[in-house]
Image (tube, rainbow, N blue to C red; front, side, top):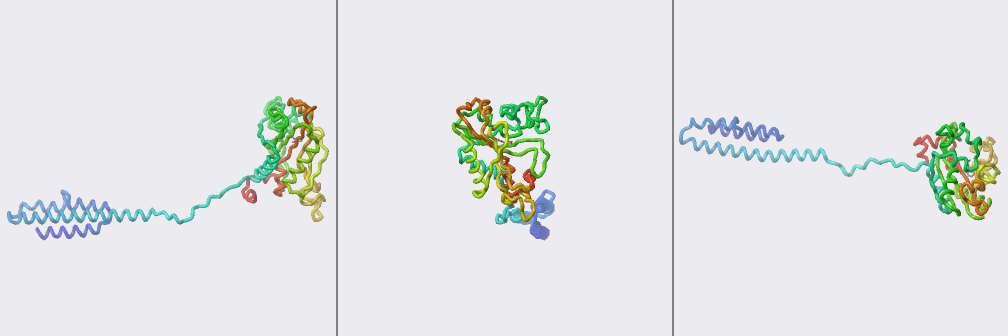
Length: 347
Ligand code: PHE
């Protein structure tokens, strides 16, 4: 029996040594020390021993049991430490690996140019305002002295919302002149950039939606000289001091007199030709149209409750896309709206 007990102990130690997981150790504990375990089976045979042998064997059995229990605890601690070690190893984070770079976008080229233009006007004392894109015909047309039946009111040019042609997508930013004069008394200085809408097919120079920047100055004693001075100064700030400008007479119902302002083509320098070919930038014109402008019509001032005998003013409306195309040398308007990153990344 002594032999048996020692055998059990040797086997137990070897098995404990070989077990490498908590589950295997638990299985061993049951097999070695449990009620149906090997040691219990030996102890059950104690009754067959003589009275002298019994306490000796009992003591030996207890010490074997104690030794196995002790070894089991040691192995448990070792195995769980190894398990933890392996887990830490597997889950280790290498904080020295560089992070994934996040691609940062930037402003759309149109917004860049708009921001530059706004900065220049704000520096000259203009207040920048925003207005509705869905507009009433009275603001977009009537109070701007554009009468019923005027061709620009035609359904083929304007997006209307109703059958009576009273609500529309604004075709110009000029209604902001009325809205501003309604709420502000002269002297006043306003800049109103925004989207406008016309029934145009999209091509290299047209889009059913584009942007205008409206300007309005009303005070005592404002003349056409102020208009010319302000606009030349602004255009030189935008296009550079070497830019050459000209004014042409024109007609707008809400200004009198009216004009358009052109800039000499930066590519052909006004000749209309590059290397014997028609200049592709100005289509041989030698000049690029920048904006419409004029002295605010007395009727428009009256429509806003401003006395035209006392006050006068000038207004202008320029196309933002055209300005951006000129400034950034973009040759097709559609590129501005396509939002192709290969194009946008160039700015
Ligand atoms: N609203 C005019 C247009 O869209 C431009 C303009 C604005 C002309 C202000 C004169 C004064 O063509």
